[in-house]
Image (cartoon, rainbow, N blue to C red; front, top):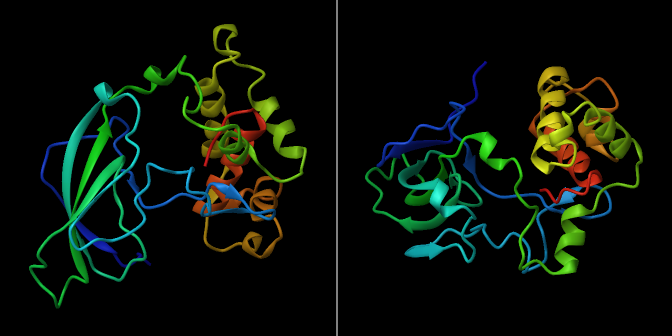
Length: 231
C-alpha cells in the first residue's frame, strides 16, 4: 500500500544528487528534553532552518558552509495536503510565496531556493566539527543524549576497525555508524518502540525494526556519544 503524496515538486534548475536520492528538509529535532529529541526552544540553535510559511519571502538567518561546493536550485512546491512548516531541497535558504495555479488541487504553492550540495562524500573527510559561532551552551545541547551508556559502547565498537588514517576523523566515524544501521536496521511501521520511554534505545538495542524516527534518533545519540554534535 503506497503512501499518498504530500506535494508536487517542479525543478526549475538541473540538479542530480551524487547518491541518487533527493533529500527534502522540513525541520529538525535537536534539543533533548529529558526523554527524547524535540524541536528546540532556543533562538541560538538551528538558525539555518525556516519554520514559518510566508505570504511574501523569508530567508534563512544562517547559510550553510562550503558554499563553493554547492549549487543554487529553485524548486516550485505545490502542497497537496496541509503542512505545518515549509520544506525544500537540502539546504533551503529562502521560501517565497507564489500564485496558486489551482486552488482545488493545491493547499499552497511556493518557491524554495536551495544551496544543494555537489561535493563527493570524501570531501567531508578531515572537516572540523560544528560552527565557530556556537556558544558552549549550544555545543552542549547538540551533544545531549539519554543517560544510557549502551549508546557510547556500541558507537565505539563500530569505529574501532577504522583504518589508522581515519581513526580520529569525525566523518569516518559517522559513516561507520550509518553503515551499521543501513546493514542491520529493518524499516517497518509495525513495531512497538514508539510507546517506550526511549524509543531509539528500544529500537537500537532490540530488534532493530523501526521507521525514520528510530533510525535518526539512534544515529544522533551515537554520534553525540562520540563527541560529534548532531540533530
